[in-house]
Image (cartoon, rainbow, N blue to C red; front, side, top):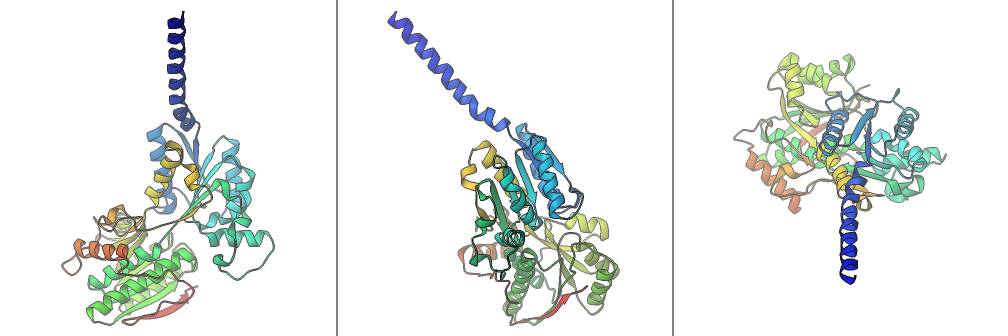
Amino acid sequence: MKKLLSLVLAMCMVFSLAACGNSDSAESTDYKVAMITDYGDITDQSFNQTTYEACKAFCEENGLEFTYYKPAGDNTADRVAMVDKAVDEGYNVIVMPGYAFGGTIVEAAGNYPDVKFIALDVAAGDILEAGVAAAGETYDYNPDNWDVKEYYNSDNVYCAIFQEELCGYMAGYAAVKLGYTKLGFLGGMAVPAVMRYGYGFVQGADAASAELGISTEMKYAYGNQFYGDADITAAVDTWYASGTEVVFACGGGIFTSAAEAAQKVGGKVIGVDVDQAAIIDGAYGDGMTVTSAMKGLYPATYDALNDIINNGKWADYAGKISTLGLVSGDDPEANYVQIPMDTTQWSDSFTQDDYKKIVSDMKAGTIKVSNDISAEPAVTSCNVEWLGNLK
Protein backbone atom coordinates (compact mmCIF):
# COMPACT_ATOMS: atom_id res chain seq x y z
CA MET A 1 0.00 0.00 0.00
CA LYS A 2 2.84 2.38 0.93
CA LYS A 3 4.52 1.67 -2.41
CA LEU A 4 1.28 2.38 -4.23
CA LEU A 5 0.80 5.61 -2.30
CA SER A 6 4.37 6.67 -3.06
CA LEU A 7 3.82 5.93 -6.74
CA VAL A 8 0.61 7.96 -6.80
CA LEU A 9 2.33 10.89 -5.05
CA ALA A 10 5.25 10.73 -7.48
CA MET A 11 2.91 10.73 -10.46
CA CYS A 12 1.00 13.69 -9.01
CA MET A 13 4.25 15.53 -8.59
CA VAL A 14 5.22 14.86 -12.20
CA PHE A 15 1.86 16.10 -13.45
CA SER A 16 2.11 19.11 -11.18
CA LEU A 17 5.56 19.99 -12.48
CA ALA A 18 4.38 19.50 -16.05
CA ALA A 19 1.50 21.83 -15.40
CA CYS A 20 3.87 24.38 -13.89
CA GLY A 21 6.19 23.99 -16.81
CA ASN A 22 3.35 24.79 -19.19
CA SER A 23 2.13 27.79 -17.22
CA ASP A 24 4.78 30.21 -18.49
CA SER A 25 4.00 29.25 -22.06
CA ALA A 26 0.30 29.70 -21.43
CA GLU A 27 0.92 33.10 -19.86
CA SER A 28 2.96 34.32 -22.81
CA THR A 29 0.27 33.27 -25.26
CA ASP A 30 -2.21 35.35 -23.27
CA TYR A 31 -0.50 38.48 -24.58
CA LYS A 32 -1.90 40.37 -27.54
CA VAL A 33 0.27 43.16 -28.96
CA ALA A 34 -1.00 46.35 -30.59
CA MET A 35 0.98 49.21 -32.04
CA ILE A 36 -0.41 52.71 -32.42
CA THR A 37 1.15 55.06 -34.97
CA ASP A 38 1.77 58.66 -33.97
CA TYR A 39 -0.51 59.65 -36.87
CA GLY A 40 1.65 58.63 -39.79
CA ASP A 41 1.34 55.37 -41.68
CA ILE A 42 3.28 52.14 -41.28
CA THR A 43 4.85 52.78 -44.68
CA ASP A 44 6.50 56.06 -43.63
CA GLN A 45 9.95 54.47 -44.05
CA SER A 46 10.83 55.81 -40.63
CA PHE A 47 9.68 55.44 -37.03
CA ASN A 48 6.23 53.98 -37.55
CA GLN A 49 7.34 51.47 -40.17
CA THR A 50 10.36 50.24 -38.22
CA THR A 51 8.33 49.83 -35.02
CA TYR A 52 5.56 48.04 -36.91
CA GLU A 53 8.00 45.64 -38.55
CA ALA A 54 9.67 44.81 -35.21
CA CYS A 55 6.32 44.14 -33.50
CA LYS A 56 5.04 42.08 -36.42
CA ALA A 57 8.20 39.98 -36.63
CA PHE A 58 8.20 39.26 -32.90
CA CYS A 59 4.54 38.30 -32.82
CA GLU A 60 4.77 36.08 -35.90
CA GLU A 61 7.80 34.27 -34.47
CA ASN A 62 6.03 33.71 -31.15
CA GLY A 63 2.52 32.95 -32.38
CA LEU A 64 0.97 36.05 -30.82
CA GLU A 65 -1.88 38.13 -32.15
CA PHE A 66 -0.82 41.54 -33.43
CA THR A 67 -2.43 44.55 -35.06
CA TYR A 68 -1.86 48.27 -35.42
CA TYR A 69 -4.05 51.35 -35.18
CA LYS A 70 -3.71 54.70 -36.92
CA PRO A 71 -5.29 57.70 -35.14
CA ALA A 72 -7.81 59.79 -37.05
CA GLY A 73 -5.89 62.98 -36.26
CA ASP A 74 -2.53 64.22 -35.08
CA ASN A 75 -3.56 64.95 -31.51
CA THR A 76 -3.63 63.32 -28.09
CA ALA A 77 -7.41 62.78 -28.05
CA ASP A 78 -7.29 60.65 -31.20
CA ARG A 79 -4.29 58.70 -29.97
CA VAL A 80 -6.05 58.00 -26.67
CA ALA A 81 -9.10 56.86 -28.64
CA MET A 82 -6.93 54.24 -30.32
CA VAL A 83 -5.69 53.04 -26.93
CA ASP A 84 -9.31 52.67 -25.83
CA LYS A 85 -10.13 50.74 -28.99
CA ALA A 86 -7.13 48.44 -28.63
CA VAL A 87 -7.97 47.61 -25.03
CA ASP A 88 -11.64 47.09 -25.88
CA GLU A 89 -10.53 44.57 -28.49
CA GLY A 90 -8.43 42.64 -25.99
CA TYR A 91 -4.90 43.92 -26.61
CA ASN A 92 -2.85 44.12 -23.44
CA VAL A 93 0.60 45.19 -24.67
CA ILE A 94 0.53 48.52 -26.49
CA VAL A 95 3.58 49.87 -28.31
CA MET A 96 3.74 53.60 -29.09
CA PRO A 97 6.59 55.24 -31.07
CA GLY A 98 7.41 58.91 -30.79
CA TYR A 99 7.50 61.90 -28.45
CA ALA A 100 3.89 62.79 -29.36
CA PHE A 101 2.68 59.99 -27.06
CA GLY A 102 3.60 61.92 -23.91
CA GLY A 103 0.02 63.13 -23.58
CA THR A 104 -1.39 59.68 -24.33
CA ILE A 105 0.61 58.19 -21.47
CA VAL A 106 -0.62 60.86 -19.07
CA GLU A 107 -4.26 60.38 -20.04
CA ALA A 108 -4.53 56.66 -20.74
CA ALA A 109 -2.03 54.66 -18.66
CA GLY A 110 -3.91 55.09 -15.40
CA ASN A 111 -7.17 53.93 -16.98
CA TYR A 112 -5.74 50.50 -17.80
CA PRO A 113 -3.47 49.32 -14.97
CA ASP A 114 -3.41 45.75 -16.34
CA VAL A 115 -2.16 46.84 -19.76
CA LYS A 116 1.58 47.15 -20.42
CA PHE A 117 2.60 50.27 -22.36
CA ILE A 118 5.92 50.43 -24.25
CA ALA A 119 6.71 53.99 -25.36
CA LEU A 120 9.69 54.49 -27.66
CA ASP A 121 11.42 57.85 -27.93
CA VAL A 122 9.20 59.32 -25.22
CA ALA A 123 11.28 61.23 -22.69
CA ALA A 124 10.52 62.47 -19.19
CA GLY A 125 10.16 65.95 -20.62
CA ASP A 126 7.47 64.83 -23.07
CA ILE A 127 5.42 63.30 -20.25
CA LEU A 128 6.10 66.24 -17.97
CA GLU A 129 5.00 68.80 -20.53
CA ALA A 130 1.72 66.96 -21.08
CA GLY A 131 1.17 66.31 -17.39
CA VAL A 132 1.77 69.87 -16.30
CA ALA A 133 -0.52 71.15 -19.07
CA ALA A 134 -3.25 68.70 -18.06
CA ALA A 135 -2.94 69.87 -14.45
CA GLY A 136 -3.20 73.51 -15.51
CA GLU A 137 0.20 74.31 -14.08
CA THR A 138 3.12 76.26 -15.50
CA TYR A 139 6.78 75.46 -15.28
CA ASP A 140 10.25 76.16 -16.57
CA TYR A 141 11.19 73.33 -18.91
CA ASN A 142 13.62 71.22 -16.94
CA PRO A 143 12.52 67.65 -16.19
CA ASP A 144 15.30 67.31 -13.62
CA ASN A 145 13.47 69.75 -11.36
CA TRP A 146 10.23 67.75 -11.35
CA ASP A 147 9.04 64.34 -10.25
CA VAL A 148 7.54 63.29 -13.55
CA LYS A 149 5.88 60.27 -11.93
CA GLU A 150 3.45 62.63 -10.25
CA TYR A 151 1.78 63.09 -13.62
CA TYR A 152 1.21 59.55 -14.88
CA ASN A 153 0.71 55.98 -13.75
CA SER A 154 4.28 54.78 -14.18
CA ASP A 155 3.66 51.25 -12.86
CA ASN A 156 2.53 49.97 -16.26
CA VAL A 157 4.66 52.13 -18.57
CA TYR A 158 8.15 51.58 -19.97
CA CYS A 159 9.80 54.37 -21.94
CA ALA A 160 13.01 54.23 -23.96
CA ILE A 161 14.91 57.15 -25.41
CA PHE A 162 18.08 57.21 -27.45
CA GLN A 163 21.37 59.08 -27.31
CA GLU A 164 20.84 60.79 -30.66
CA GLU A 165 23.79 63.08 -29.99
CA LEU A 166 26.12 60.08 -30.38
CA CYS A 167 25.01 58.96 -33.84
CA GLY A 168 24.66 62.62 -34.84
CA TYR A 169 28.30 63.05 -33.85
CA MET A 170 29.27 59.97 -35.86
CA ALA A 171 27.53 61.35 -38.97
CA GLY A 172 29.08 64.81 -38.66
CA TYR A 173 32.54 63.39 -38.02
CA ALA A 174 32.22 60.99 -40.95
CA ALA A 175 31.03 63.71 -43.33
CA VAL A 176 34.05 65.92 -42.71
CA LYS A 177 36.50 63.00 -42.76
CA LEU A 178 35.00 61.93 -46.08
CA GLY A 179 35.95 65.30 -47.52
CA TYR A 180 32.83 67.45 -47.18
CA THR A 181 33.60 70.93 -45.90
CA LYS A 182 30.27 72.70 -46.49
CA LEU A 183 27.49 71.03 -44.58
CA GLY A 184 23.87 71.65 -43.67
CA PHE A 185 21.53 70.48 -40.94
CA LEU A 186 17.81 70.51 -41.70
CA GLY A 187 15.80 69.49 -38.64
CA GLY A 188 12.09 68.90 -38.52
CA MET A 189 11.08 70.71 -35.34
CA ALA A 190 13.24 71.90 -32.46
CA VAL A 191 12.16 69.11 -30.12
CA PRO A 192 14.75 67.48 -27.82
CA ALA A 193 15.47 64.39 -29.96
CA VAL A 194 16.01 66.43 -33.13
CA MET A 195 18.13 68.95 -31.26
CA ARG A 196 20.32 66.21 -29.82
CA TYR A 197 20.86 64.85 -33.33
CA GLY A 198 21.75 68.32 -34.59
CA TYR A 199 24.01 69.35 -31.75
CA GLY A 200 25.81 66.01 -31.95
CA PHE A 201 26.24 66.57 -35.71
CA VAL A 202 27.81 69.97 -35.03
CA GLN A 203 30.16 68.52 -32.41
CA GLY A 204 31.27 65.69 -34.71
CA ALA A 205 31.89 67.98 -37.67
CA ASP A 206 33.83 70.39 -35.45
CA ALA A 207 35.99 67.62 -33.96
CA ALA A 208 36.88 66.21 -37.39
CA SER A 209 37.63 69.70 -38.71
CA ALA A 210 39.97 70.36 -35.79
CA GLU A 211 41.76 67.03 -36.30
CA LEU A 212 42.30 67.81 -39.99
CA GLY A 213 43.36 71.38 -39.23
CA ILE A 214 40.76 72.84 -41.58
CA SER A 215 37.85 75.25 -41.33
CA THR A 216 34.41 73.98 -42.36
CA GLU A 217 31.00 75.62 -42.69
CA MET A 218 27.50 74.56 -41.70
CA LYS A 219 24.04 76.01 -42.22
CA TYR A 220 21.73 74.96 -39.39
CA ALA A 221 17.92 75.29 -39.51
CA TYR A 222 14.58 73.70 -38.64
CA GLY A 223 11.68 73.39 -41.03
CA ASN A 224 9.24 73.75 -38.11
CA GLN A 225 7.39 70.66 -39.36
CA PHE A 226 8.06 66.97 -39.92
CA TYR A 227 7.43 66.90 -43.66
CA GLY A 228 8.93 68.51 -46.69
CA ASP A 229 7.18 71.05 -48.89
CA ALA A 230 7.91 73.49 -51.71
CA ASP A 231 8.91 76.32 -49.36
CA ILE A 232 11.47 74.23 -47.49
CA THR A 233 12.81 72.76 -50.73
CA ALA A 234 13.26 76.29 -52.08
CA ALA A 235 15.22 77.28 -48.97
CA VAL A 236 17.52 74.25 -49.25
CA ASP A 237 17.93 75.01 -52.96
CA THR A 238 19.70 78.21 -51.91
CA TRP A 239 21.98 76.21 -49.60
CA TYR A 240 23.19 73.95 -52.38
CA ALA A 241 23.44 76.92 -54.77
CA SER A 242 25.77 78.67 -52.31
CA GLY A 243 28.09 75.68 -52.06
CA THR A 244 26.58 73.31 -49.49
CA GLU A 245 27.67 69.79 -50.37
CA VAL A 246 25.74 67.56 -47.97
CA VAL A 247 22.67 68.10 -45.77
CA PHE A 248 21.72 66.03 -42.73
CA ALA A 249 17.92 65.85 -43.02
CA CYS A 250 16.57 64.99 -39.59
CA GLY A 251 12.88 64.70 -38.76
CA GLY A 252 10.33 62.38 -40.33
CA GLY A 253 9.49 63.18 -43.94
CA ILE A 254 11.42 66.46 -44.10
CA PHE A 255 14.17 64.54 -45.89
CA THR A 256 12.12 64.84 -49.10
CA SER A 257 12.90 68.56 -49.33
CA ALA A 258 16.63 67.98 -48.83
CA ALA A 259 16.65 65.16 -51.39
CA GLU A 260 14.65 67.14 -53.95
CA ALA A 261 17.06 70.05 -53.64
CA ALA A 262 20.11 67.77 -53.80
CA GLN A 263 18.77 65.98 -56.87
CA LYS A 264 18.84 69.20 -58.90
CA VAL A 265 22.55 69.79 -58.39
CA GLY A 266 24.02 66.35 -57.69
CA GLY A 267 24.23 67.12 -53.98
CA LYS A 268 24.41 64.67 -51.09
CA VAL A 269 22.26 63.98 -48.03
CA ILE A 270 22.57 62.15 -44.72
CA GLY A 271 19.64 60.05 -43.53
CA VAL A 272 18.21 59.65 -40.04
CA ASP A 273 16.64 57.15 -37.61
CA VAL A 274 17.07 54.17 -39.96
CA ASP A 275 19.40 53.40 -42.85
CA GLN A 276 17.74 55.58 -45.49
CA ALA A 277 20.13 54.83 -48.36
CA ALA A 278 17.72 52.55 -50.21
CA ILE A 279 14.81 54.93 -49.66
CA ILE A 280 16.57 58.12 -50.74
CA ASP A 281 18.81 56.69 -53.45
CA GLY A 282 15.94 54.71 -54.93
CA ALA A 283 13.71 57.75 -55.26
CA TYR A 284 16.16 60.59 -55.92
CA GLY A 285 19.39 59.22 -57.34
CA ASP A 286 21.90 56.46 -56.81
CA GLY A 287 24.71 57.39 -54.45
CA MET A 288 22.96 60.42 -52.93
CA THR A 289 23.06 59.14 -49.32
CA VAL A 290 26.48 59.50 -47.69
CA THR A 291 25.44 57.76 -44.45
CA SER A 292 22.59 57.71 -41.92
CA ALA A 293 22.51 58.53 -38.21
CA MET A 294 20.58 55.54 -36.92
CA LYS A 295 18.68 54.61 -33.78
CA GLY A 296 18.28 50.94 -32.96
CA LEU A 297 14.51 51.25 -32.94
CA TYR A 298 13.96 47.72 -34.26
CA PRO A 299 16.11 45.93 -31.66
CA ALA A 300 14.84 48.20 -28.87
CA THR A 301 11.26 47.21 -29.72
CA TYR A 302 11.97 43.54 -30.31
CA ASP A 303 14.20 43.14 -27.26
CA ALA A 304 11.68 44.80 -24.94
CA LEU A 305 8.85 42.58 -26.19
CA ASN A 306 10.99 39.48 -25.84
CA ASP A 307 12.12 40.32 -22.31
CA ILE A 308 8.64 41.31 -21.15
CA ILE A 309 6.64 38.52 -22.79
CA ASN A 310 8.98 35.56 -23.12
CA ASN A 311 11.35 36.16 -20.25
CA GLY A 312 8.83 37.52 -17.77
CA LYS A 313 10.96 40.53 -16.92
CA TRP A 314 8.31 43.22 -16.79
CA ALA A 315 9.53 44.19 -13.31
CA ASP A 316 12.84 45.24 -14.90
CA TYR A 317 11.02 47.62 -17.24
CA ALA A 318 7.98 48.99 -15.42
CA GLY A 319 8.28 52.64 -14.42
CA LYS A 320 11.63 53.13 -16.15
CA ILE A 321 12.71 55.68 -18.74
CA SER A 322 15.81 54.03 -20.20
CA THR A 323 18.42 55.83 -22.25
CA LEU A 324 19.77 53.56 -24.97
CA GLY A 325 23.13 54.19 -26.57
CA LEU A 326 26.42 52.30 -26.73
CA VAL A 327 26.61 48.78 -25.36
CA SER A 328 29.78 47.69 -27.16
CA GLY A 329 33.06 49.39 -27.92
CA ASP A 330 34.13 46.53 -30.18
CA ASP A 331 31.04 45.86 -32.31
CA PRO A 332 29.39 49.07 -33.61
CA GLU A 333 26.46 47.10 -34.99
CA ALA A 334 25.53 45.90 -31.50
CA ASN A 335 24.83 49.47 -30.38
CA TYR A 336 21.49 51.26 -30.22
CA VAL A 337 23.01 54.27 -32.00
CA GLN A 338 25.26 53.93 -35.04
CA ILE A 339 25.89 54.65 -38.70
CA PRO A 340 25.44 51.79 -41.19
CA MET A 341 28.38 49.54 -41.95
CA ASP A 342 26.99 48.43 -45.31
CA THR A 343 25.89 51.66 -46.98
CA THR A 344 28.11 54.42 -45.57
CA GLN A 345 30.27 55.70 -48.41
CA TRP A 346 33.59 54.71 -46.88
CA SER A 347 36.83 55.92 -48.44
CA ASP A 348 40.55 55.89 -47.72
CA SER A 349 40.05 59.06 -45.68
CA PHE A 350 37.44 57.43 -43.44
CA THR A 351 37.35 53.65 -43.28
CA GLN A 352 35.30 51.17 -41.28
CA ASP A 353 38.30 50.76 -38.99
CA ASP A 354 38.38 54.53 -38.42
CA TYR A 355 34.70 54.39 -37.49
CA LYS A 356 35.26 51.48 -35.13
CA LYS A 357 38.00 53.50 -33.44
CA ILE A 358 35.76 56.48 -32.68
CA VAL A 359 33.03 54.14 -31.38
CA SER A 360 35.60 52.49 -29.12
CA ASP A 361 36.77 55.91 -27.91
CA MET A 362 33.17 56.97 -27.25
CA LYS A 363 32.50 53.84 -25.23
CA ALA A 364 35.73 54.32 -23.27
CA GLY A 365 34.91 57.98 -22.62
CA THR A 366 37.91 59.28 -24.52
CA ILE A 367 35.52 61.06 -26.87
CA LYS A 368 32.85 62.94 -24.95
CA VAL A 369 29.69 64.16 -26.66
CA SER A 370 27.45 66.60 -24.85
CA ASN A 371 23.70 66.04 -24.77
CA ASP A 372 23.04 69.55 -23.47
CA ILE A 373 20.45 71.26 -25.66
CA SER A 374 20.04 74.33 -23.47
CA ALA A 375 22.64 76.21 -25.51
CA GLU A 376 24.18 75.89 -28.96
CA PRO A 377 27.39 73.85 -28.82
CA ALA A 378 30.65 75.75 -28.82
CA VAL A 379 32.76 75.28 -31.94
CA THR A 380 36.35 76.00 -32.85
CA SER A 381 36.80 74.81 -36.45
CA CYS A 382 33.28 74.51 -37.90
CA ASN A 383 31.64 77.85 -38.54
CA VAL A 384 27.92 77.37 -37.95
CA GLU A 385 25.29 79.73 -39.34
CA TRP A 386 22.29 79.36 -37.01
CA LEU A 387 19.21 80.09 -39.11
CA GLY A 388 16.38 79.18 -36.73
CA ASN A 389 13.07 78.13 -38.31
CA LEU A 390 12.74 78.31 -42.08
CA LYS A 391 8.98 78.87 -41.77
